[in-house]
Image (cartoon, rainbow, N blue to C red; front, side, top):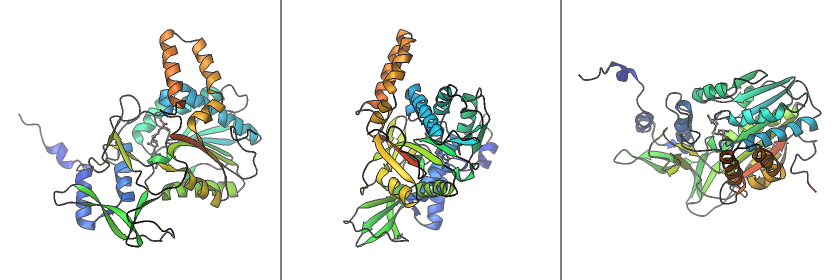
Length: 369
Ligand code: SAH
């Protein structure tokens, strides 16, 4: 007997079908709108509907590779808290906490720092309901209250320390193409067969005052810019702010298309299956730093992830763990920590950038002479 069709008739059509319809009606949509739909569509966005991180997911991240990552970031935050004068109350936030692993590992470090958890509120900035559930489960034994927010702008007032691993790369970007002496918005349209293809739309507004050569692509990151502006506004009110971004990207600003899709641990075409692959871009660390400084914040780095973790004491922590490990655990600890720092793995492509309120000493490990 054929399965009843009623249920599927009231379901929302798949994202690809809805995007086709939208483009057929409205014309080409910008890369930013396409990326926003693919990642955050309320029904079918990649992060709305899936649990993508980990060995069974599409990609794996540093906290999933080794517990030392979250522990060292936790120690970093504890140091910053002390440098701020051990304020209470205070907010420790994570942007895009994934499965909650980094936060769980950081909490293990914080429990050993007297006074830190008293008067601290932990805030998790997460849009995905699926990942919020996972985070709640991972963090169920946390000794202090946890609160979830959709946006960093909604965080409670007070001194703030933020950790953000692989968060910025998941925010929508817009792309401009230099064509015949003008910057044009890069868009997505349909070809004769109904496939999604890139195209160029109207002239950009406002027009960046940068000259380029024919076909160059300039990436803009309005979502990251807004985040920095919101953090800077808190700092300007007098609440100290320190943020540690770890992400993949380049040190210098350069033209080029860095949009990429990953599905099942493999690169995929960002246009073939909207909502089914993770779409990200590379971070322009120099640009991020310029924006932070233009907003009145201090920025330190970027420093390659390997160097950053080694300077924070990765080897000592690794050796402590190895002492207490079974032979199988020992292998996992050694290979995991090596992967975090190896230049051929995550050690160099990934970088750390700290953004903080003016008037504070350089944070570790940028405080070395
Ligand atoms: N930091 C985690 C996960 C990285 S994946 C790790 O290292 O494993 C990106 C994370 O950011 C996911 O949790 C995703 O749901 C979340 N995210 C993506 N866009 C977001 C947005 N605009 N606002 C809040 N969270 C977002």
